[in-house]
Each structure stands twice: as C-alpha cells, then as structure tokens.
Image (cartoon, rainbow, N blue to C red; front, side, top):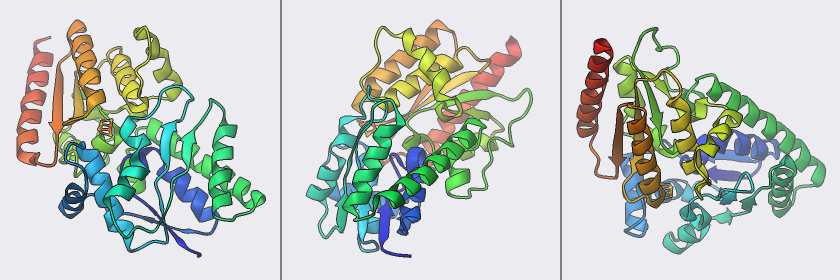
Length: 322
Ligand code: SF4
C-alpha cells in the first residue's frame, strides 16, 4: 500500500464512504477512517469549532483531529451538489475552509469541489481531477472510478433492502432488519444520515428502538426514484439536498402503513427549522403521531429514551384502540 488518506467517519460518510474507500484503495492508497464518534471526539470538536456550529459540524472537526497525525492526506471535498439542483447545507460548502481556519497542523487536504450534473460523467470528471492532483494516470483513475461506482451501487442496494449503514460499515451486531416483526410497531425514523446512523450523536436511538422491538424505516431504505416522486408535494424543492430527502421520505412513509414518525434534528440547524415544521404539519394532516428529538452535545441518553418509550407506548395504545 502507498500513502494514507483519512476520511472522517461522519457527515457524507454514511452516504459515500464505500465509493471513496474503493476509489482511493484502487489507486493504491491506504484509506483510514476515523474511529467511531465518542465523547473524546466531540470534546475535541467543541474545543476547535466556532460556538454557533451545529453538533454534526463540531463532531466533524473532532474526527479531523482524530485523523490529523495519522495520515498523509485528508479527504474533505467541498460538497456543493450531487444532482445539479439542490445544494448541500452552506456548512458543507465551507467545510474545508472552516477546518483549515480552526485546526492547526493538518496534513494536505484534498478539497475538490463536487458539483455534479445529472449524469455520471460529472462524477468521472471530478474523480479525474482528484486523481490528477494525486498524480495518477487517466487509465488508473477510470478503473478506480468504475470499481467505486459498483461499490456505491451495491451499498445503495443493501440500504434499500433494509440493511443499516452501521451493519455494513462498522459490522455492528444490531440488525434492525432481522428484528422486524409481523404486527410490530412501525416507525419511520427520519433525519440526516449523519444524525440517525451515528450511535453517539443519536444517543443509541436505533439500538434502543430495536430493543423495544420497533420496526425501523429510514429515508435511505427508499429508492431515490421513488423519493423523487414526492418532490411535487411542494410547489418547489427546498434548497438543501439532505433536507429534501428527509421531507420526501416523510411524504412517502405517510402513504405507507406506519404508526408514527420520529424526526431526529440537530439543535441550531437552520434547514431543520423548516423541515421540522413541514413534517409536523403534514403528519398532523394525516393524523399520524410525530415526535422531534433534538440533539446537541449535552443530550443524555436517559432523557431521549424516556421520551421515546412514552412515544412508543402512546403509539401502541393508539393502535390497540383502532
Ligand atoms: S444541515 Fe443542519 S445539521 Fe446538517 S450541517 Fe447543516 S446546519 Fe448542521
């Protein structure tokens, strides 16, 4: 193996890690993912990040610090758009600059702008720029891109089949898919993937729901083509990529036989102030129970668990009375 490239295990990690892992590995780089989120990592992030940042951004800074002295390069792309329409939240757009301004002693950062049109050539061209910056030749880059594309496709297929990212990326023993029970409570758990799937930031939400024998459904289990049909519920899309996905998934699940919707939201998240209100109005119109769990670095598992248990109890009671 050649040089090392660090990929922080948060933000777009849950969407695109298999792609970038395969791409850099195929170019003979050793990919180093930061360890799972922890108190130590969030403490590092809180210390280095501007005060008014949301917890996912603070956590990202902590993951960068966890990798800082271990790798030759850090991969922090400037995520602008993956469909040529909606952009990522402004904090994603400025992420490489925020990290550089806040943290000293960083290795070289690969901060290629990712702004794709609606075809795959945009992604190939982006990969070419990244590979060329690493002085790779065209043939190797195209081959690496092909392998990465297949890895991403396989990953998406697994998610659509109900496997959770943690089961694929971290070998977690939790298996919400296998614990699904006929006649059990069905909850859609919606939020940005870096909140829903990170056990630390979500204070073990999915694990606790699995322990309560709740059948969990998430936005990533819905094929993109089906989600996109629900964009027409609003007269125009929201500006932000992940916010659209959460909202469309809410509209989708409200057409399915689910018992309730849990929205996982980060304290201080601007886009979520709109998403949460739209979800609340829509669930109310459909008479479907809805709860918002707002998380920040001070959130304790016991408090969230109490609210969750009360919500599940209420949903069960409601179902028995139907
Ligand atoms: S969408 Fe919200 S939670 Fe995510 S990075 Fe932006 S402000 Fe933070």
